[in-house]
Every structure is written in structure tokens, then in C-alpha cells.
Length: 157
Image 1: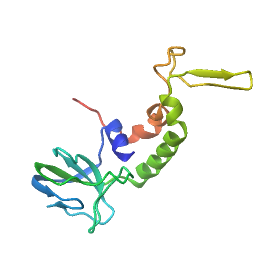
Image 2 (image 1 turned 90 degrees about the vertical axis):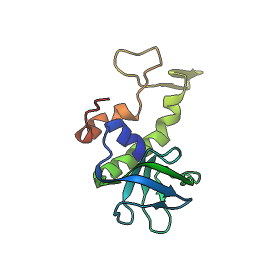
Image 3 (image 1 turned 30 degrees about the vertical axis):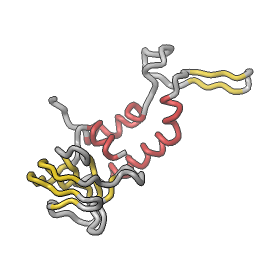
Image 4 (image 1 turned 45 degrees about the vertical axis):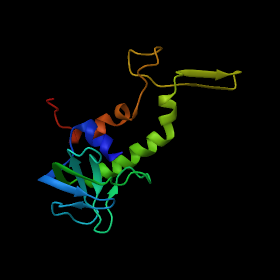
């Protein structure tokens, strides 16, 4: 979720970057910029490992929380950046993940409303001016935009 949030706000909270050729194994990247245990870092320019990871001197972890989200062995020329993500962003990422876990299936559903024999009904929230077409349902970006805006950077690309 942190990766998606950083992409959305155009801010990875980059501190120091190291450019060069890197060797990636199943559980480590070398060389790395100076990192503290638990600190996040960003890999850029890799064919198979671009993204945010958490530094651990024993095994580097992807922030994806899935078993298959480890590193893939490769050598690449690119950049690795140490990140300084504020604790408030981590807290908000947890809230957003909980929201997605609860409502994500409904947001991705093709149905905008449903009624079953007058006993049960629901209508998905839609963005203003789009009601009825079902293509612009409210998503986590809409719900949390105002709280994420303080960290948003302008994207010139």
C-alpha cells in the first residue's frame, strides 16, 4: 500500500540516493546506501525489483505483505534511494489498507446498486456528477485525498 500511496502523491520521501550497478540476490541488495534496520528504500531502474523495500540486515522485505513479494536475483544499473517516510504516512497507510480491505471488492464490482426482494439494498458512492454511469465510483484516493494532500508533490511529467 505504501508504494501506491507514494505514487499517488508523487512523493517517496527520498533522502539519499546511490547510483551504480547493483547485485540483487533472493534476500539482499549490494551495495546499499547507509540504512537503519526497518528503514524503507526505493529501487529504481531494475528489470524485476523496482519498488519500496524494508531494510533488514538478514533479509530485505517487500512492503507488499505477500509471500511472493521477495527480491528476484539480478544485476542492474540503476538507483537505490534511502527513504524517510513520516510515521503519520505509515499510520494513514494502515487506515487506507483497512478501507481497501473492507470496501475494495465493492469498488471493483461492476454493479452500482443492488436490491434483493426489498430486504437488502445498496448503492455505491460515486463522484459528483457521475451518478448512474458506474465508471467513477469512490475509491481510496477520493476518500483520503484531503489527508494525503499535505505530502503531495507536483508531478511535471
